[in-house]
Amino acid sequence: MKNRIVILLSVTLAVLLLVVGVAPTAMPTSPALAQQTGYEYVVPFVCGWTTDLLDSVNPGNYATTVNVHNPNPSTVSITWKVVRVWPLHVLRCDFAGLDIKADAGRAFRCKNICNRLGIPHWPPPYFTGFVVIKCYEELDVYAVYTVQYDLGETSIAVEHILAR
Image (cartoon, rainbow, N blue to C red; front, side, top):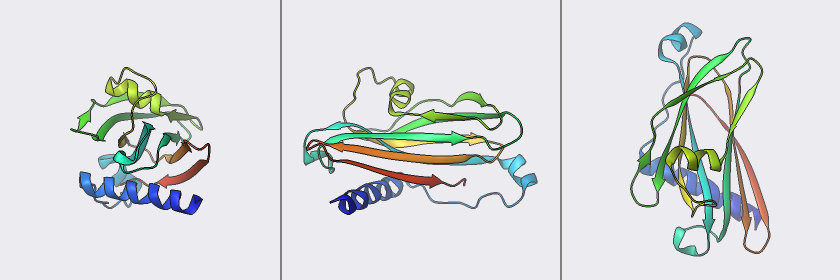
């Protein structure tokens, strides 16, 4: 059952990438080039409750946490935005900036994502999309996907997100 869940989450994320047309691009090959073009991290997310199979996933509570770590010796300024791609129409917000101190981190959770998109109720109905992070220094970015099914079973998956 757990393997089926992990496969289902992986397929859902792959379909999201295809639907939005996100194609991997080359990562900057040198620090000098990265300073000119920057790094971009595109993190798929799933958030919210679903009670039936109409959402193409098993009923349960889905959550994503995007963990960002700054391994650099100085503070890094980032900008981030959220793009919801399902259900219905695309909904996005503008980039917002924040600083992450040296050897410190930041977590973006479903509640942060809802706030950025102006989704007023909590917990929200099931929705999916991307958190986009831009900066001029390389970061450690991981997505932690969790789901608690209506029957009480819980699943977790962790994905390392590479810069593009």
